Image (cartoon, rainbow, N blue to C red; front, top):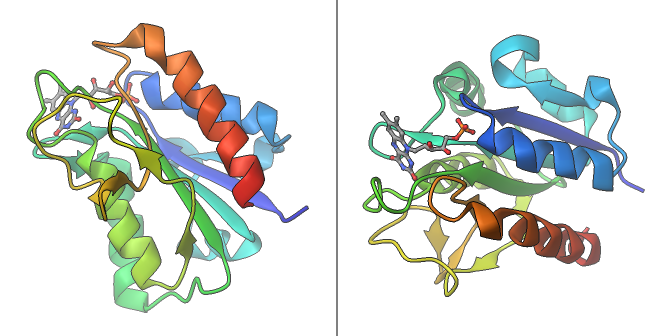
Length: 171
Ligand SMILES: Cc1cc2nc3c(=O)[nH]c(=O)nc-3n(C[C@H](O)[C@H](O)[C@H](O)COP(=O)(O)O)c2cc1C
């Protein structure tokens, strides 16, 4: 199986729920599960993997977590080449209070990683969500798994389980 790395940011633990489930389902080693704020050193770490699981909750006006700011700057300014890699995005948001930017961080991360050559997998139907706008929408689908553990905590587990089953067929 291809080597998987999980890179994620979470301020309150909601995005962590997805990261932990991915870690377990795909048997990812502790060292290959990187909390951006604490364990990330350099964008060269991405080069160690065939598949990247990239996570962030959304902040401000649909921005990614602050710990992604420097890595994203490095990916774009260094012209990092991620071609040949698969990437799947995930993150928590709040569709009620921040419905104008629901989980938009996923869309911003998608733009950066796909521009660097990675191929996105794990698109999700938006039908099950109620929000106004999201930059995570690409061609009518979310470009990854959005969860709203604030307003719809009862849906989180099933959303994650379904997404993991989907990823198993796409990786
Ligand atoms: C100041 C502030 C700004 C936020 N901005 C957004 C946003 O733009 N889009 C969104 O979907 N959620 C937004 N949220 C909601 C968080 O993303 C949500 O609480 C999420 O569950 C946090 O996930 P985490 O625990 O993984 O950090 C915001 C929350 C706060 C407090």
